[in-house]
Image 1 (spheres, rainbow, N blue to C red):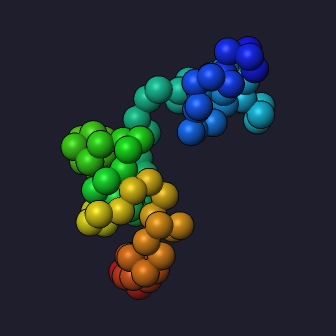
Image 2: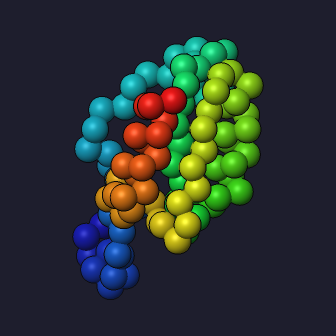
Length: 101
């Protein structure tokens, strides 16, 4: 496999992680692939440039989760995936407001 990968110049480790995850997998239980019946107040921060999940998909998923509780979606303009690393000031502001509420 190493010989095959050398010429492809992969810039992401994701394909390898999908094939050989370094973490143990949890067994699929009755909750696997299902939305919860209830949620505590939940905050979702989503970058508008997230390459892993398109904003429209995140909005759709949050709408489904709102059937189970209060879910606050904060869209961070021009931010990619993982807001904590890529837009710390937006993360701090959103979390402080959420906790204060």
